[in-house]
Image: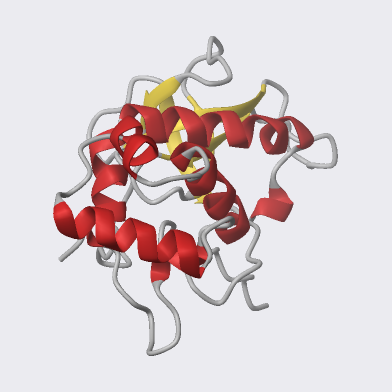
Length: 193
């Protein structure tokens, strides 16, 4: 089983802070501090209540089931539309940071990605990958699996920056603008009343 094909109920262990609102949301009845977080493993958007005030944007924090030092409670999953403007602006930087810190995992995605159906390969879902790039990628990885992003760029002619390709795809998935979720957990469904 590929790292991206995990169980739906997997919980995030670590996340990157997208925004910290010390007095909560302006329209909220209760004024409790809020942190908006992007999970590192499945790119889950989360809202949490902090234990401490000194949380910084772009900080990596523990959000798993064990004893948390900076987060007291994970309130809920968020959709892209529920993020603050600050969080939306910080999101691409957080995604890039996660990809760079987990290069081996994401290079592995390029090495093991498979067709979605008869007509489409999952690599074609990355913005900028057409049939020619797909053919080049598949031939290069068949000769020898990719070892790094640099290796990919050297061996596949005219390939855009793989980090940018992944970031753009993850943003599309987080915004809910796709039928296929290959790198992220599908967005939270609106709650029924």
